[in-house]
Length: 230
Image (tube, rainbow, N blue to C red; front, side, top):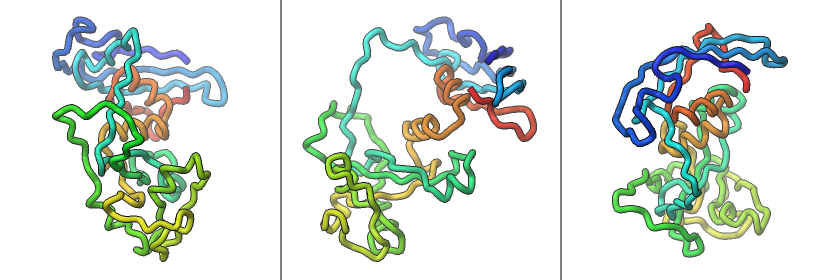
């Protein structure tokens, strides 16, 4: 693969250095990407990359020593995302940012260790959404208890829509225990989970470019064309 670009997003960005945290708007940049190898090529595409954020939108250098910054999740925030909705993936395979995602909410689990959240840590909480997906409400549901223990029990199953008791662990899930999974659209996900789902399901070219310019938008200017393969 060969890439070249012109405009504000090329090079190291418009900041003066790694310590420059000024909010700058480097503006969009036009990049040309050429892939000469099959099956993705030979192919030339024109990309419009619009960065955002401090230091010209360029990611900060990685620390010399990796530090553990795991913060124990608050009850009611997203603990994990199980899967993208199979119907959405089938109907719109390239539009991951329109899919629904199955989320399991966090509880105050004494077995989970992590740093306490900072005073200003206020993640979106979704406990009030549990009622929409309650057991017996017309859709198959996943037991949170079974999901949390899936690697020891090897239980990955769903429950029938009409069931109000988990057929796998025989427990009756409750709202207080965030007892079942919920479905959220991509737009409803917090920013960190959006990035995780983009990394997991989005085009690899986008993932690579956003590792350099986090949060940037990348558009292929060739009519009807997808982003290039990498």
